[in-house]
Length: 222
Image 1 (cartoon, rainbow, N blue to C red):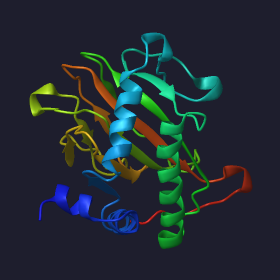
Image 2 (tube, rainbow, N blue to C red; image 1 turned 135 degrees about the horizontal axis):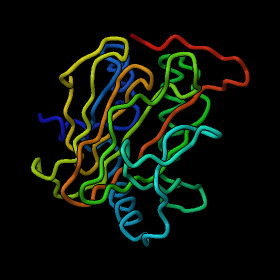
Image 3 (cartoon, rainbow, N blue to C red; image 1 turned 180 degrees about the vertical axis):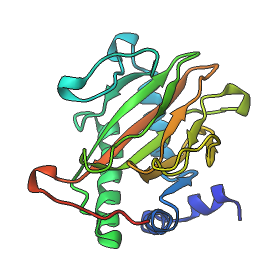
């Protein structure tokens, strides 16, 4: 049975098991067709329907350190909201994943935030990490792809590198942004980048966080 058929044949609890096992074993997982096809199709139609003004240029840094830097990233974003039923459906699935991973791995995941990402022809995101050890409350990253008919020649690959503490020239994974694929990885462990695409590229990027205000600390699975 192929990975695609395996993922489509599993219920969400079995998918949560696969994600938890992979986080313990390698720190990341790529699952084709993780969400129900109806949810995936609705999300694609949602992001494809947005006018240009709905998106804002993505920046680097948070709060007072936020700045636009087109040499680092050129994607555009729009944050998800529970006010829209399609977006709420995706956020509800991620809430179930949050509860499932807390039950399985005791990660202390507190909440989740996510945005649509649009990469125009030629847009990219240079190598970076989503969190630095001990300096943020983001602990688990997710990327969900919404690109029907994507070919290898279209570019826009997610390149993942080994542990941030160990410099590496070659990626350990080259992920094609195929429709319905879900990537989950430990935020502070894997430097990653998005290569330039030759056509419009859609995704949803998200992060599970711990409650830093409570001084909550976790030891992510290794």
